[in-house]
Amino acid sequence: MKVLVINAGSSSVKFTCMKSDDFTVLADGLVERIGLPGTFFIYKRPGADPIRVETGITDTNRAVSLITSYLTHDDAGVIKSLSEIMAVGHRIVHGGERITASVLIDDGVKEVIVECSSLAPLHNPPNLAGVNACEEVFTGVPQVGVFDTAFHTTMPSRAYLYGLPIEFYRNDGVRRYGFHGTSHKYVSRVAARFFDRDIRDLKTITCHLGNGCSISAVDGGRCIDTSMGFTPLEGLMMGTRCGDIDPAIIFFLMDRKNMNAVEVNEMLNKKSGILGLAGIGSSDLRDVERKVAEGHEQAEKGLDAFCYRIRKYIGSYLAAMGGADAIVFTAGIGENSATVRARVCTGMEGLGIVLDPAKNRALNGSEGEIHKAESRVKILIIPTNEELEIARETLAVLRGNGVV
Image 1 (cartoon, rainbow, N blue to C red):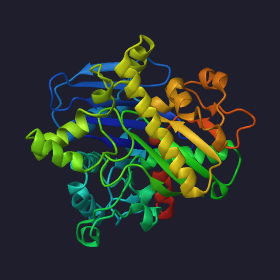
Image 2: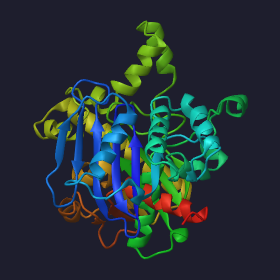
Image 3: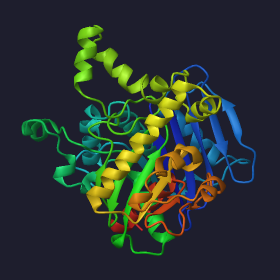
């Protein structure tokens, strides 16, 4: 039997089809730019050339139908019929406080997804559209929701409450929620297996660094703090998001620059971060690193600030947990930028964090230890695999509900 993982976004649907016994990937890909000019479909199978198809698909339902038509295709397919799919696991961004673990999706769960759409308006509605589309295609097949926020619901109130009047939390749900939970959960588990230790005895700082960035303090397998907050805007500087700033800057901009709320929101989320600070017209850290190598002064300042923020959060989580056994770097930048990892860790030797420069360069993009023997805190690169984590969670939910 097989498990299908679906990640439905506002203009894309990503998929991975895996065997349920060993999670071997049979096929994966995506429909991109749905409803926009230049829509295309990419279908990949191990050992075969990728298939790319230009398409005029305009909605999620048609995207799911296209995906399933290729999965069962006479030549390119990897299953004989859709009846081989035992469950569909969906990435859902926001479950608020009501959903604290992966769950079978029913009408009640859908209501929560809708309720939390006000907190994740760009993500929850398309996530739910993916669920509804799959229910039409896979009649009677269990649909499982794996929520980004669920991993962070173990945070204590001291970590998730803001210094605001308490009624904003009680009445409106204003609190720290955290995101990238599936990735943080996955790499913290892998770190425990890497060291052959019980995760309940391990303190780990997980650094998910990509276009979106977040760091979590994971104590005994439970998240006790994370850098993203009420929205994904808080925390580290990111590709286009500003991260932590003085909130009064917003009022300053509205007063001094006559910017309205929509303009400020657009600027903080889409025109700030590496894009805004490095001054090279790109949010891609690879472009920034190239400009730094060429001696671009502002790019250097942007890269330095980006790495400094990461280092500060690591330091704060060392304090929050009373130390750490390991620091994990993951996601696009975390896995593939030896420069960022070196800049983050250099100067932290007094905290027991001693990077091995040679290992850091040699293991770039692959899994392994990059610390020196004398480092009290282990430093790891662990490539994230959110699709695998979603598939595992999906099967765990089925077993927990007696479905398999």
